[in-house]
Image (cartoon, rainbow, N blue to C red):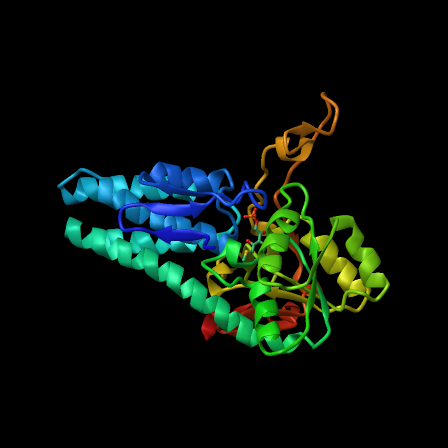
Length: 342
Ligand code: MRU
């Protein structure tokens, strides 16, 4: 299984909309299809969409016809803008696009720029896998043998280049011999937990129990859940974390019940330019995701519906932010400054 693959002249993407019932890979030769695959959730998860954008931009460069450097750069910048417009919350998308734009700006030879863009896209991909392994090594000490760990959404191999962030920490703890049981929240409305996290973990024989989002408080209060670990889409300078809608609720419940709440993310998810969670743009997705479950309408016509895809968990609810460059414990007191300087 892989999330995304660069083929030299095309990009292959696992269609996550069809999981777990079908494992289908689509190969795209045109950058617009790659941009669409981010927009329509064929690929998703903050690091994975950054990788998809980088590969999509490298792919676009191969097809831009212009032989004139300024025209080429103008066209490539326009394409970067298309990728920037796909999803607003995960900052990894913008950091990956920023890396590609730098190459376009600096270059003065079209064929060299094309080669460098391909190299950079592969670096974004490879660095993410390495970062996840390091996040796992840095985070595994926070999990004890026998822990039942709650996670929300999918912050696993499917959401990244491979291995995963939150699920990477769980994988690393298991690799060092600890017994960990995962409670996966279904993650309404898009069901990343029910469809993706359970699929990914059970393929690796990691014990997983599926619960609905509203059950987490019950399992915390009754002492079943010992830790919570989630990924992130953007972490503001003050340590506030945007992640999949529902994360905030789990964090408040964890604090109320004295349960550690960890966030695992690569430094590409840190956004020192965004002061606090209040400044993070929250994507509102189609209300159809709320009203329909697998094409079945579950609510009447003519009502008001909202569908924010993310929420913000204030730093005060977070026990530690685990990255590949180190861990910030109690981010409410220090923000992410330590990680930015390292
Ligand atoms: O809407 P999605 O599925 O892209 O949202 C994904 C999440 O919120 C993940 O938890 C986050 O991106 C971390 S992935 C390592």
